[in-house]
Image (cartoon, rainbow, N blue to C red; front, side, top):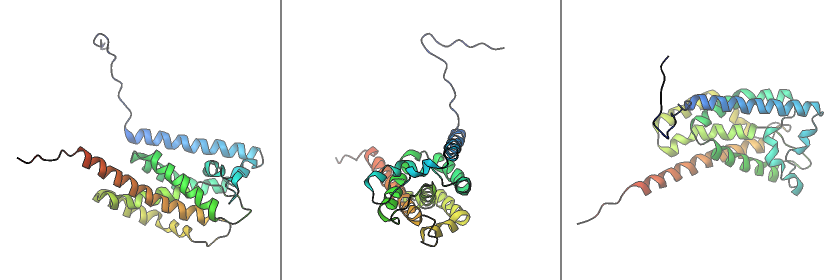
Length: 210
């Protein structure tokens, strides 16, 4: 056994977990939280679903906050689970998860609140999923990064078919959440790329003419 004595007044530095591991752990925690919520929802005979988004009702605005965490039933949850888990992990790997998800969450929810059918209640994380997908597909174009563009092409080939969900083909599916989520993902990619360019420009020291 080898002992180590740190310098006086200093503590040995702990190795931080790699990004992929932190992203995986966070994804698993999010999935676990959704399962717990759905268990509670099922146990209360899906009473929690009444907290979804009620279009154009002032008291339904708070549904924007709760809707992505609620699902109509287990089938609904499992339908979102696989693409949601993969895309969640990939967005976490970009280290832009909070900003991207926040933008998508709000814009997707507002789109549902403004344009969904009257007297309906919308729940589900699909708006977030559509936003994550479009963000990952287009961010390389805004960042002018070849590897990100190639990654976006691969994702489009794998999951691009689900983007047909932005069209009003099924009255029981919220195409509004899908459409505005997808738009929000593009806006998030554009916003972050523009912000990063401004940061890089500020760090460049201008030359001095003599």
